[in-house]
Each structure stands twice: as C-alpha cells, then as structure tokens.
Length: 54
Image (tube, rainbow, N blue to C red; front, side):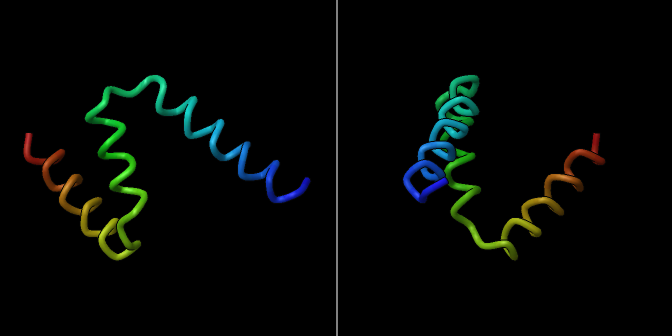
C-alpha cells in the first residue's frame, strides 16, 4: 500500500468517526489530537478526577 492510500484510509476513518459527533465534539477531538502526550496525560487525570467527584 503506498503513502497516498494510507493517507486516504486515515482520512476516511476520521470522517466516519466525526460523522457521529456534534460540531463541539469534533472540535474537541481535533484539539485533543494536536496536544502533546504530556498534556493528554494531564487531561486524562483531570477527567478521571471529575468523573470520581459525582
């Protein structure tokens, strides 16, 4: 499989994932994919803390 085919598959997957999301959810997903792994870890810790606060 060449690079163009791989890129098309990635775009297709992203489009199918995003088709079920609201605009806000899509925006958050795009933003989350762009943050560093260190920031993702912090975001996960905050989310887990908030989930446990119920």
